[in-house]
Every structure is written in C-alpha cells, then in structure tokens.
Length: 215
Length: 215
DNA sequence: TTAAAATTTGGAGTCATTGCAAAATTGGGG
DNA sequence: CCCCAATTTTGCAATGACTCCAAATTTTAA
Image (cartoon, rainbow over all chains, first blue to last red; front, top):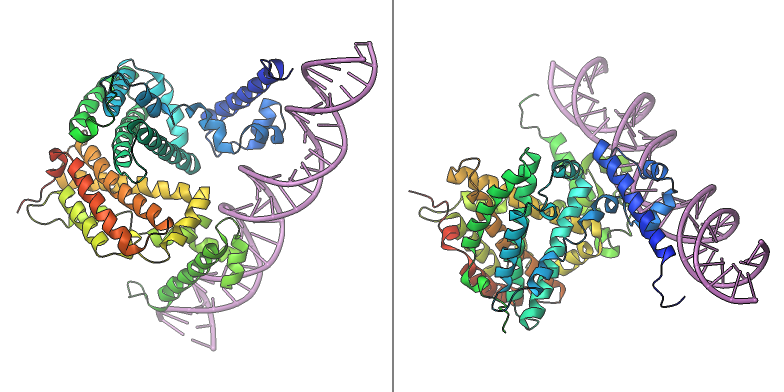
C-alpha cells in the first residue's frame, strides 16, 4: 500500500476533521466563541475531547480553519502576475477582481457579518486574526524577496510587502466593518471598489513598478 | 477625604503594582514566558495569586505593561504637530528624532533583544503585540478623523492612519529584528535612519499633506 | 478609638490543554 | 474468515490560567 493513493483512511480523517469543524462553527455562530466549551463540541460531534485535539491544536483553530488559503493568497497573486506586470499591479488587479465578483473569498457573502461578529466578541479569536495578518505580511515579504531576486539585506521587499499588506488588510477590514454594519454584499462591493481606486492612487511609483515580470 | 489628592493609598497601590510587574518581568527574562507560572510570580512577589489578578487582567499584561504609552504615541505626535505641519510630517519627524536620539522608547537600548526574545518565543505574547499594533492603528484613525474634521463616512483618515501605522510598525519591526540579531543600538539607529528616508519617499503627497495644522 | 471602605487572601470551581497508556478500529495478508 | 500491525480513538489524571465568593486584614477619616 505504500506510495498508493492513500484512499479510505485518509478520506475518513478528512471527513472527521471537517465534521468536527462544522459542528464547532455551528455552535460558535449560535452562541458565541466563549460560551461553547470544547467538551460540548466533542459531544455534539460524537467524538472524545482528545479526538478534537488530535485534529486541532487549539480551540481557535476550530473556527479559523476556514481562513486557510488567505495567508498565501497574495503570494499566489504575485507569483501569478502577468508578463510586464508588477507585483503590486497584480495584487490590485486580483483584489479588484474579487471585489467586483462579490466573492465570498473576500467576505462578500450573506452571513459574513455573523462570522465576523463571533470574532469581534472573542479577544482570543481577534488576536488570532491579527496573527494571520502578520503571517500574510511575512509570507508576502518572502515571496517578494524571491521573485525580485533581492539580497538579504535589501529592505525593499519589506517595504513593498508592507504596502501591499496595507492594501489587503484595509480592504478586508472595511469589508468586515461594512458587513457587520448591515451592508449587503453588492452594496459593499461597489463601495470598496471606489476605495481600492483611492488606495491605488496612494501607492508610490516605486511600489507600483517593483518586481515586474520580464518576458 | 473625597476629592483629595488621594495620597498614601494610591501610592502604595502603584508601588505594589510596579513591584509585581518587576518581579514577573525579571522571571520572564530569566526563564521565558511559559516556563513561569503565575503562582511562582505571586510567591516571588510575596503576594497571593489573587492579588496578582487584582492588578493585572492576564498573565501577558505582567510583561507588556511597560508598552503602555506606545498605543497613543502617534496620536500624541499628531496632536502636537507644528503650525504648517501635516500629520505625516509630524510623525516622520518625531520618529526620526527618537531613532536619532537612540531612544529606549523605540527599543534602541541594551537588553531590548532579550525583551523581544521572550515575546518571540511565546505565541500568546506575540498575539498581544499584534493586538497593540491594531490598537495603535485604531487610535490614530480616531485622532486623524478628529484633527482633520473628517466626516464619518470619509475613508481618508483610515487610509492615512494605515500608511502611518505602516511606517511605525515597519520601523519598530526592523529595530526589533536587528536588535535580536545582535545589533548595537547605535548601529541600528544609523541603519534605521536610512530606512526612514526610504519610507518617506514612498509616501504619497496626499498622505504627506493630510491634516496640515493651520495657523 | 472606631466603623466604614478598600485590599488581600484562601479556597473551590471551570475550562483549555497536555501526556500517557489502554482499547478500539482499520487495512492487508494468509 | 481470521490475525497482525499500524493507526486512531478514548479515558484518566494532571497542570495552569482565570473567576467567584466570602472571610480576614489593613487603611482611612472622623
């Protein structure tokens, strides 16, 4: 069986993990993060508390699991930039595209306000979210350094990553606030597109021309 | 006694608080954040565990207490900007001044690397630090909105605050890293002054001219 | 000196998280 | 169909942060 497609067992694990996460998320959305104990989640998911911890390192991961993919999203955008396009241009283009498409990936969906509300009300979840932002920044800096072939001491990747992370965080932050304030996805989308224009206008030429793909 | 200068009692409380914080910080620096229990701190400080919690909401606060004053520092700089000076200009000037002076307020001091090392190695402390950054941003946004007399829906205070927070965070981050890497305060100061020049160069005119003090 | 106000403390309890070893489950031969 | 070995699940005990509460203890002002 070695080297095989690793079928049943793996599939089952993935399902169990997903099941626990789903049950937990449902409870959190219903009653808030702190009001639900891990023991309750385990019982509701029909597994032992230890099994929950087999799959998730901490209670917060049960909720923020669905945010995976956000961390390296900007890096993927940068790596996928078109010929003649800079890192910043690619990020702005992709971000605009997601917002224009009213994509759930940027929080433009019904129910997102409930999701954010749970985070807002739980300090430990909020802290985790900040940690994610930091992870995005660090991931992007690494990618930029590699893509631009910059030396280790060169500060430009740090600065450009900072500017792009600012763009991303601000957009995600405004979307979150507007959705919590009761905005409809389509409305918020329109509003944020204007915001992106304004932000693009604040980006330096040096940033906009960094790491242009040659070829 | 009401309305009085509130002397002895207040002083004693401040002293107790400071004493607990000092003892805790000493232990953390020696053995790391997670390796020290609150019970140990209480014993070393010669108080009960409950007294520790009377003064500090959480274990992390025992260490990060000394960071108070950082949160509204940029707001103070902005409010103190000179006639004809914009918010951004004031922040850059003050920041440059702190770095030039090799000020401990920005981490340019012997021992800062040990302080940062403890934070780096404790996820919960790191999370708290990110929370502080967020607090800086929010505080600054509020101040900018007030100082510029901007309307509630106006996004400019958000954007300018984001740019200035980027400046501040990047500088503090680089200082932290360089100090942990063994840099001497004076060395790091010189290096960071160059960085500030580069960052200033990336700021948009719109940002540099926002909230100019008239008079 | 004394009574009210504030502070400190002890103790019990909740909950997240970890470590460990026993028990149950699974997949693949035989 | 049965058994072995690997993997997963589970029960149990323990640690440590944090909260609640009511009983001491200390401090202050009259």
